[in-house]
Amino acid sequence: MAAAPRILLSGDVLGRLGHIFKRVSSVNKSAGPFDALLCVGQFFPESPDQLEEFNDYLEGRSQIPIPTYFIGDYGVGSAKILSAAAKNSANLGFKMDGLKVCENLYWLRGSGKFTLHGLSVVYLSGRQSASVQQFGTYSQDDVDSLRAFSEEHGIVDLFFTNEWPKGVTNRAAASEVTSGMLDSSAGDSTLSDLVSEIKPRYHIAGTVGVYYDREPYVNVGAVHVTRFLALGSVGNKNKQKFLHALSPMPASMMSAAEICTKPPKTTLSPYSFSENASSADQGVKRSGDNSSDTQYWRYDDSRKRPKHGDGDGEKLCFKFISSGLCPRGEKCHFRHDAEAREQSVRGVCFYFLNKGKCERGPDCNFKHSLLEDGEGFSGRRFESGTGSSNRSKECWFCLSSPSVESHLIASIGEDYYCALAKGPLVQDHVLIIPIEHVPSTLTLPPECEARISRFQSSLKAYFKSQGKVGVFFEWISKRGTHTNLQAVPVPSSRATSVKDIFDLAAKKLGFKFTTVENDNTSEGRKLLQMHLDKNQSLFYVEAPEETFMSHVIEENEKFPAQFGREVLAGLLNIADKADWRNCQLSKDEETKMVDDFKCRFEEYDPNN
Image 1 (cartoon, rainbow, N blue to C red):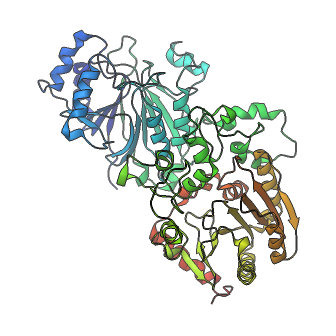
Image 2: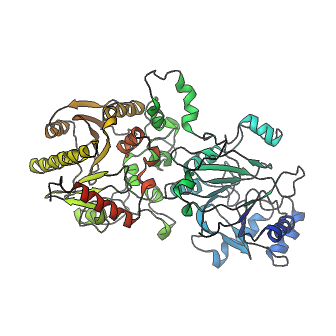
Image 3: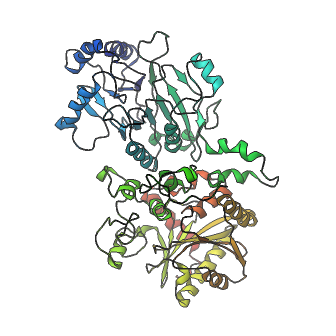
């Protein structure tokens, strides 16, 4: 195995380049070599009389010992120096791995994500400010970019910010560690939201002027812990530690057991919405509630459902698009668009949905086109061409589409096919997909409906042989996307809990399922058709014992597009798998998964 990279971390440099680089050279000689130095907090001088020393390094009269990166793009002389760097022809284009200021010195501008010696690095430069300036502050676009990065597959190793997130420490810890220099209510609440979404393994910050190594904390919806580390300013009079060595193995090279390790004294997340809400909810919690209730904190919304916000109403709310729930509720000034969320869940870039373009270009891992015809969510057209040919080209489920992943297909019938789910929740998680691009399996002709019901019965028999029962659910969009009927096996011992947990999740979202019981699957599905309106979206689930639960989704309702999967993840106590992107496999692993399923299902498959 390759050796872990070795990096040095520094707090606010404040223009004291001679001091920091002398110390780095000494440490590098005695304990090195180190691969890079990363600086948080103000990098530029506090007064003009420090510029001479600063310029000695910029102009090559003094040497910078190792590659050095900074995000504190403010202080005396910063505007002039950084303006010149930004205009340098070598720095033109969309660069997230640093703009070269001089030999071995790189400015991490705005926000971005890049790989440094195998480590996944995310950063936010500048500070929070009521007025956005050219240098020294971050913008809403910078924040939105990071939120888009947080949706990408993989674990972020290092997250660098200048300021501390609000709530990272309690008053007692702040008093003990900083001798009263830090108010526990201080900090940047935007950073609190970001770090809880990005879930880095290490979060490093400066600005406060103190050294603070917080106990690791668990992340909601992830298996790894986060460590927060704050550093003092270079050469500070209070002897606060300002240089720290770190040698983390990249998460991409770690085993699952290593990533899941919880060190002693690991705490709950200081940013968890569930923790904040728990005390308020405690008084109204019913005695019959069980541990599954905690899986649905994200759905806990006793307030009136918000309509689209005002102010920045044309921009999409990232919290809603990424999770299906915005805790700001009616106070949110951004748009809660369920159809945009559906596109995001299916892999469309948030930046593209929000602006019609993505500055990351080919480096972006998400799709830059809608998965149906060309009309966008803000009434503008993102791509040319309409009609079924264009729709089939972009659709993930049309067999004629270049986007279809045919290696996932396990069985093909006359008018439908069965595919293993990409990023499966559990083994044998499958999709039943009409061959024709239709918005619902409930609108198929009677003969097609009969064949799908027969296939469902075959799946139920197969699941039963495995000691499990099948749960089927479908999210029907009024926008007419290519539908799929999902089938998820759950242990027979949990069968009686399926209806209860869906009812509980519905209550958290503020609605109640319409429930119909029918011993015949075909007849039950016919009853569901009575609730189907092409001008409205519908979610339904077929629970064990032929219990059909349906909900008509209102125009401005905040309904999570992955609701069915997320509820079952809670039932099975695998909340970290609620998002399919956390469960992605390599193509070889997917191919083997399909082959194994086909062997087990062969004797039950009506299409053989």
